[in-house]
Image 1 (cartoon, rainbow, N blue to C red):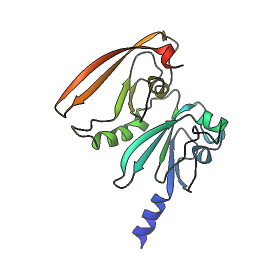
Image 2: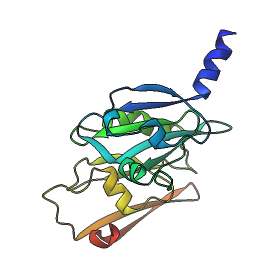
Image 3: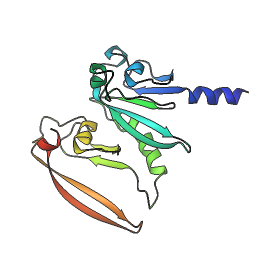
Image 4: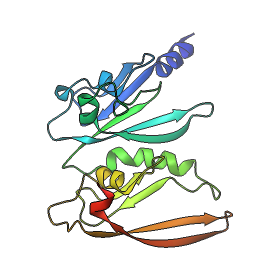
Length: 192
């Protein structure tokens, strides 16, 4: 009886963690959106990244982990828009600090993505380096663009020359070999 109650509680909850005042579970309800969980800036600690909030989601039937990100400032500004992401049971919403390293919060998510990878389905991880505020590894999101990765990295830092960059893409071929492609990127155009 007790195990069933615990399962029901987890399945009916979402969790918030990171740079927030009240981390932990919250009751899930159908139609719940990001701004319902975090209704205003008072929920966040000072210096929270309002433009990159990560949502770790478990997909049925096998609870495979996937991720998506949101811009909480846009969600607050347009609560009925797609920017205000509809949450699902068991979602974990992670809020980052603009000045502190993100690895402590990201490492468990990246470990989940690495654990479910295989030769045919490589890890869904991307990396950003150079003149961004928070270089490092980030989860690859469906439809992710260069601008999304720059946003994940906290944006360009003061020393950045926002003209050109390089995108290195790896493609696994038949689970046997890897092809590398180097693509020049115009950062100004990619972030427009």
